[in-house]
Image (tube, rainbow, N blue to C red; front, side, top):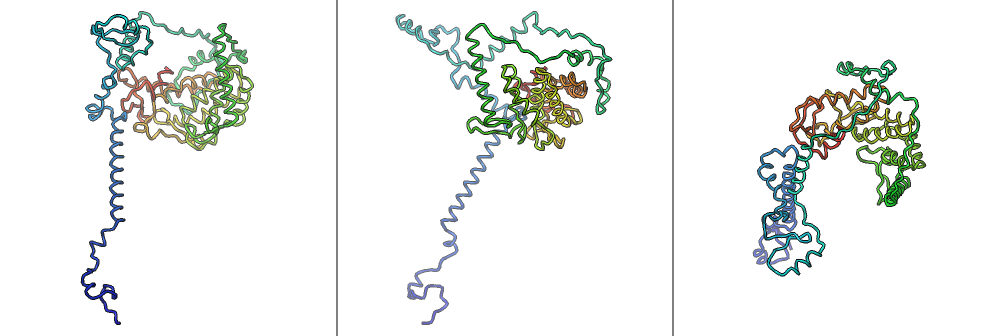
Amino acid sequence: MAIGHNSASPLLSSTQQRLSPPPTTMMMMIHPRSVLRIREKYLLLAIIIIFMVISLIGMAYLPELKTSKVYLQYIKPADSLGPQLLGLIPPNDNDDNFNEIGGMQMVNDGHNNNYQQQQQTAILPPPPRGRFDDEKRLSEKIQQHFSQQQKTVIPKPNIPKSSPTSSPIVQSNSLDNHHDNVNNQHLVALYEPIRRQSNWTRIQLPNGEDGDPEIRKKRDKIKQMMIVAWDSYKKYAWGENELKPIKKTGHAPGVFGKTKLGATIVDGMDTLYIMGLMDRFEDGRQWIAENLDFNNIGSEISVFETIIRYVGGLLTCYAFTKDEMFLQKAVNITQRMLPAFDTPTGLPHALIKPALGTSRNYAWASQSNSILSEVGTLSLEFYYLTALTGDQIYYNKIDRIQTILDSLPKPNGLYPNYINPKTGKFGQKHISLGALGDSFYEYL
């Protein structure tokens, strides 16, 4: 039988072929998979919208936006609702309907006193404090402080003046005219007694035993905790920056890059010495002498953390032992940090690659500015380095930073958290005594 060109099946009768229309374009478009794809698109669109909404809400809490109209009009008023929402508002002190018995409020409803006597014997916790209570206490404490007629001040140390002619302090060729004019004789008189004493020996710390047996028990417990922590670190992560106590493995990535720099060793050395754990102190000293080296570090590390933890820790060990190895290590590490100070103002960057000498600020910092708590928390280590080595470059680096900070206008007498290393001006006016500003005020 001949097969025609009809698109219908040849096995069907002509009547059935006429009753079964060919598939149309619309019928071909309706397919379960195509419907699923449309749902996927809507789901993806919903995820994107939710992410954008969350991002916009989060941006409202950034320091730069604290002064925006949206924050001031909608978000800041909600901050004051905390005590009300949590029910932390105490009753009015003048309300005669309330008494405090056993730490809880009770209504004087005229019932016999047996009930009240039973409640007096109950030991109940006081109601939670609201934020207004803390603010009230803080305000009273501030007023009490300023009402004092006399201030308690630590007396200035009586440092004998030495002959300025014996100082080996030499001006660095890289210093500018401002630092070239610094009075060397003043520095000599200040630092010479610290640096030039010839009778320095290993410091013998006092025994410090307390007559109270309970205090001795607590001190022994603390010492035992230090032994456990140090021995565990040595067993599972010796030479690493940190120890993961649960996994019992070392951990290097962090503010010191990916290099194993024994941060825990340097951090713990002075504590070991003070506690008299000299065997463990000698183990740490040997590792530092043989392994601590910043010369070939190609990853970015924190300038601030390196100076306060490594340089500060090594200088403390030198002050305890007069071991020149600790001083040399501190000097070498500091030299590797100095390129971070090569900015138009002398304000250091936050991050540096020691092997390359390149530095930059954090990308997340406001307008890539330097951070107050970092640039302002280097003075103790740098001043002490000048005192010990006679190299004035460390003193000059800090003197330049302090000169800039002193010259800037300060809102309400406080320092904003961000400062531009190119212009020497404060960035946005966010101020904090906590993160980003805390250690600056501590070093003052």
